[in-house]
Structure formats: structure tokens, C-alpha cells
Length: 297
Image (cartoon, rainbow, N blue to C red; front, side, top):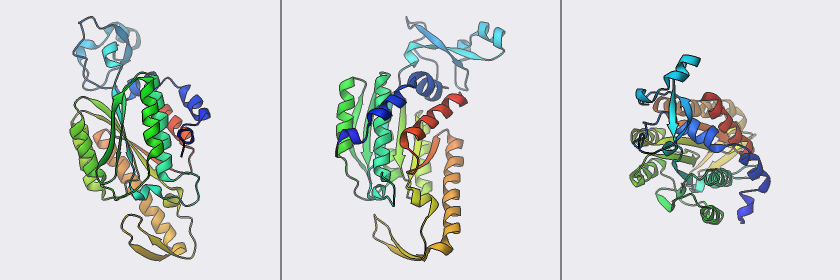
């Protein structure tokens, strides 16, 4: 299993065309941060960004307001770097694929590799965490180019195994964070939503910016099965026999409601919820998300 499988040169070239700092981190996840404590202490002015709740009103540029009638604050160099953590679910359920080239796990690794490349390319420190029912591996955030090789090597060696406890691992990671950070989760969320949502609320309450990439297999979303089928839970071994054709509509409605509930709850607490399935090319899915962040801010 080679590193190149997860960071293809054509994917790198496509994603690298985006200015990550301008379009993703600064305009997205640094949006609304408190004013830098270093303002006024030889920190260079960088650029403007839209005013957001939580910004210091003293930083509003009234000259810009007079010209545009919109509130902008001055952004300083001290604000332009954020520490990121990418957390990848490596539980057994992530190994599932029905007919796609990539399993959910391989899809998550592809996204993690691309985001690591982008963030290090912008000199933003990024770390990697893997988890199932607890955190298994952890690489501390670094921004040096050599760190990219360390992350990719670890990603390439991972194998999905074990049961999952997403909520517990979110709380574990929250306890590890010493400073305001950007935390990116990649998981199928196949667990009770309420503990997970509660853990996400606590993480947000700690002042961290959070993206939740919800990755499902294409078959888990669209249920393309026919006739009598037996399904097995990959983590518990529990089996269920159903009439696929008669169950399809009900199943799809439940999956849609499941995603809609996450969308609504995450929106309320300020978590970016990104529903994906493995039929989407991961590089295009990521680019669409980055562009959507740009358009919102």
C-alpha cells in the first residue's frame, strides 16, 4: 500500500491551485476569532476580513466602512496561522465498500493526505490523529515539509480494525488541545448521535473550529440492493435479513433524516458538517467544499 495511492500527482496539482490560506483557513476558520493579543506589539498588518461576532469593535476599519458601508476588521500576521488536527476513524466499519474503488477508510485517507499537503504548503502546522474506540496514533502538528512525509507514511500503513467510539475520542482529543485549533474529523458516524453531538458541543465550547466530514459508502446512502439480502454489522457481527426492494424507500428516508439531523445540530453549534459518499471523487468533493467556504465568507 503506497503513499502515492493516496496522494496522486494530478490530485495534488488540482488542489494546490487553491490559495488555502485566503480561501479556506483565513476566510473560514479564522473568521470570528478574537482579536490577536499581540496587536500593537510590532505585529504587521496583513489584510481585511469581514467583521464577525466576537471580534473587537476597536479593530473595525472605519475608513473602509465609509467607502463600502460594510464592517471590516484589520487582520494581522499573528492571526494567519492556525494549528490543525486531522482525526481519521480507523474502525472496522470504515473498511466497507460495495462496488466503489475506495472504501470509506481509503476515501478518508485520501482527504487527509490532500488536506495535510495543502496546510503544510501554506505553512500551517497540522497534526494527525487516528482512532477507533480510543485514540490510537498521534503525530503532533508541524509545518515543515518533512512532516508531510511522516504523515503520509503513517496514513499508508494504517489498517481499519476495531469498534468505534467517536464521542469518547472527540473528548480525548479535546483534552489534548492546549490552544485554539482547527479540528477536522473523518468518520462514518455509525454510532448513537447524541453522545457525539454532545462531545462536539464541548469541543466548540473550548473555542476550537471543527469540520465534520461524514463519509458513507455509496451503497449506504442509496441502497442499490435487490431481493432478499443478509447484512452483517462489521464491528459486532450482528446479522439482519431483509427484503431489499421493499425496504429501500424506508432506508433512504432514514439515512436522509440522519444526515439532516446532523446538519441542523452542527449548524446550531458552529460545526461545519460535510456529508460525502464514496461515489464522489474525493478531490472534487474537497474542492467544492473549499469553494463553498469561500462563497460564504
